[in-house]
Amino acid sequence: MDQELNAYLDRVDRYLKPMSAWERVDIVQEIRSEILELANQGLSPQAIMDRLGAPKDLAAAYLRDVIVKNPGFSWRRLGSVAAFYSLAGLGGMIVLPVTSITAVMFMLCGAFIPAAALLSLAASLVGIDTPWVVMQLGNWTAPPLAAFPIAVIMGLLLLLAGRGLWKVTVGFVRLVGEKRRSL
View 1 (cartoon, rainbow, N blue to C red):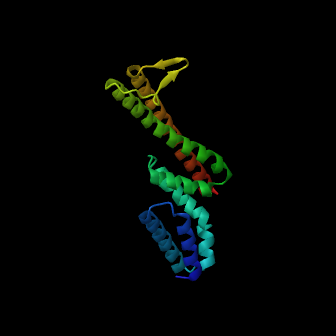
View 2 (cartoon, one colour):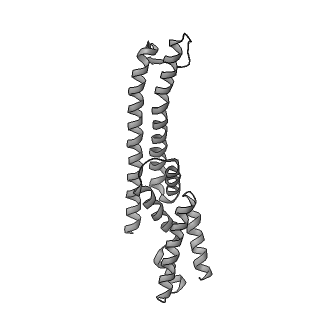
View 3 (tube, rainbow, N blue to C red):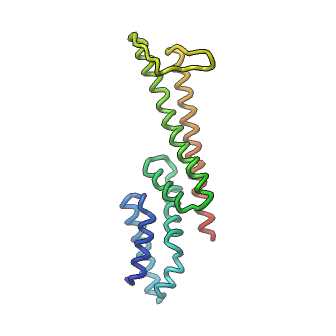
């Protein structure tokens, strides 16, 4: 394969670094096959690169597909969103960090709050005071037995809010990817 085309593939691969190695290898192999097919049709290396587009845009399209096809949350998926964010432009510089970071923090707090309330409840049952875990609403401080169900409800609400924001993140990636694809 031509040296220019190998350099092109290396640039695409660099933009795909946050993805898992096997996903990157599959994508680069797919692009390599497309390049070889186009070369067999008699296209020059420059014509092939023009047809495929800029390495950054091609990588963004693949990152978009990976994020949108599996919209569930995972730490690896968050890495893909971060990579897409770096390629998404000005809109992504504001929307993606806000929605993705807030989604992760809401989900972590949604798990942490009930766990802390459970720890406080268990400690109070054996007579240990936990002044660092307090459920306070205005001037009223909830006793540990009342604080636990409140914390569970708050945790569920935060988890749901986090999942909703993650869906907003994936939806934004889908929207930006479709706009880029239509260009």
